[in-house]
Image (cartoon, rainbow, N blue to C red):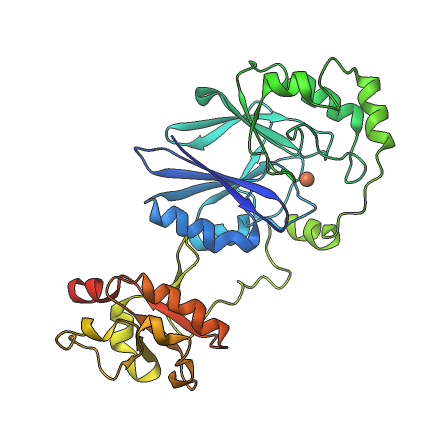
Length: 346
Ligand code: FE
């Protein structure tokens, strides 16, 4: 199985990609709206097909990418029946199994942080995706959104701590850089619910906590009840001046074919060194040539009236040139995927 743990630094959220190595079918757990392009780029670069997006609960701190991913890929949306969010294709009940061919997740209803919290157990790989029910050395708060510390205690101790000690715990957040734990570790060391704490200990602890109102809750909760669909139902704006793909490395790229067809409307910036300029390239006209090593000092030579697409031998140095152009105030910039090598063979 392929497992990737992805991080959104704004909300400290972990998104998990699970995929079957043979069928290449994939599941995303708790994707973040703003990270949709990143996640789709990874899925494409790994040769996967996204089939299912599953949220562990209705998040208060970020907007899910479920609806957006469904629009882009046709995947199905799964979440707890207790949330009854719009656009959900698979309302999940306690005890259900769902997934893709080769990967089956068991649903455990674990209310307490919210009423609609699910924990997903991957028995074949001894893993459990706990959402906010159990965090590493912590747990989700229980002071808003139908939160109930007694319910949370029972969910953790009866649905998660009853799993074998070696099961890996993957939570929905961590604010201190910790990436995974295990059932045995949390039973021993969780400062709220581990080390033999009983329900009373836990409830008193949780009730004594004073936490600030989540910043994004007024925006995130209504949006998440629509599975992350924006209020106007529109897809977010994307660069429309070119057929751009953002890679998993975060680089805006266009294909040589697009550049050949659209040469009059863009500036092609060739950043190869002078001694690399060989025979004229088929279909390439009027490129502005500034070697990468001189680009910072000669940046004023790059025309500002049109978008800029950058070119080098393999597409690596030209991707670095994008950053230099952006620093200089060029906002419509993209790298030509694969550079001269791909241009010739494409
Ligand atoms: Fe939460």
